[in-house]
Image 1 (cartoon, rainbow, N blue to C red):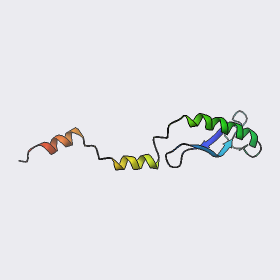
Image 2 (image 1 turned 90 degrees about the horizontal axis):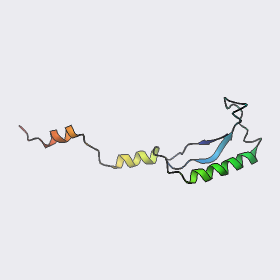
Image 3 (image 1 turned 45 degrees about the vertical axis):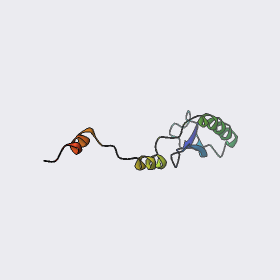
Length: 88
């Protein structure tokens, strides 16, 4: 099993710095086998990259947070009703 890092800026994840574990023999993922088996990691990373190419960008992360802050704030119905009431 290869382990990949989540996207840093709300985009797609990559296999850069991926780790490789034999979860059958190492359930706690203590021994990273990436250096011992670079070819296996390369094959699995290529398969993962092909799969990931069809995925949409993550809905979380700094880029998405920035998009949310740039939108106008939504008011609740109660706040809108209170705002539209005539002053006494």
